[in-house]
Length: 296
Image 1 (cartoon, rainbow, N blue to C red):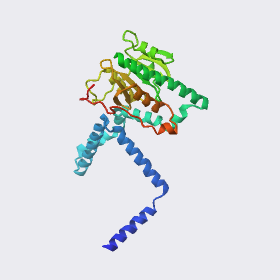
Image 2: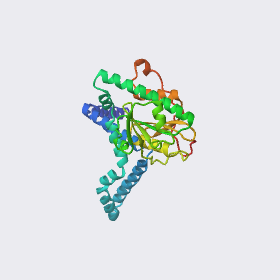
Image 3: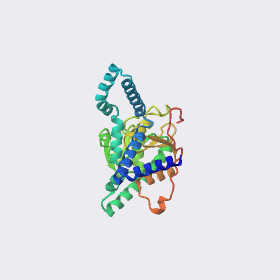
Image 4: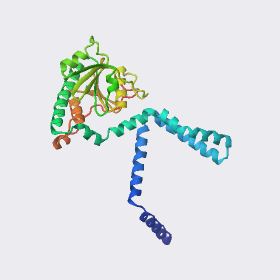
């Protein structure tokens, strides 16, 4: 028994000695791709499609083993067009994956600015914008005025901006309040903020197609979730019925923000943190995904 163990250990060591650095890199890359592929389809409609494809593959192997010629031929012809069918069926997921690749950390550093002056201007404009958004959300919360504000990041929202009216104005509480005043012509749409400026208003956003959303949520909240699923934008929503301040990020809606917690969230997402500020922890109230049976 001991000899068998030693022989097995020797075989294992000889196999490990054959592994080259590029083989390790190859394994790491494939593992990364598989992990992100699973992460991409998890908790989406693509998960059910993957299960269906897995069942079809098992049926093909089973029919081949039993030599069921007609079934095997049918499934083989199905697989010939499988790649094209997958591209059509998984189009939203593939688009989201490519957008995530484009929003890499390296891309964020490149887009931040090419000089110290640009960086200082960016921080100044974004700090002014963040304060205006947080103050406006608080005022709208107290008056129970519905609002939907989109803060653009790496994903450019040119197609969404085309559905509204270009404003290109410095953000302020009075300006945002006028846009979302219930008698104003632009109050029903979303307001787009780009580079610290109120760039457009009255824009139409795509609604979420997820079934895992509370039925109590209205069109404004569903549009916020839908836009956050299709981009990396941060969306601030004020409920017209309850005045509740919510934030949508990456397809997740969080509720019950105050001016202070909203301000802290936006600062952590848009402003570079110093070593001291980086130690601060962001407190996110009611950080949960709103589901079908959730309360508004």
